[in-house]
Image (cartoon, rainbow, N blue to C red):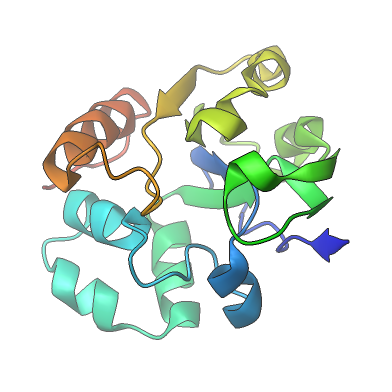
Length: 168
């Protein structure tokens, strides 16, 4: 059984982006969105920083702190699962995280955004938290049918709705 990553949250988190479960590269690196081709970090740095390249150049710990400073937190809908490879379609025996815990962990919570379809299957649970819930197109390289520009457009709209200071 694979174990997920600990939540990346703070008391100031206004938007939580929920993935499904970390891929092989993310688990190996112990980093959210650790696959080089995942577009998560390019998307958020473009939207929230005047200098996206500087954010992308940061070591993971500094990048994670930068994200928290923007009011964005990260977690996954699954705490553990069995899976060959990184595809969500291969997830078996999934053990969900206690998403209700977000209410206590994030008193400033304004919205939840599900990164991709597998995560969005849990929207019925996150809607009970009393904040807007959004579906984002997956930032995964497996979501190749969506261009970066198209993903940026949708993510921008969600970040604006969540009250984040969008730049890009």
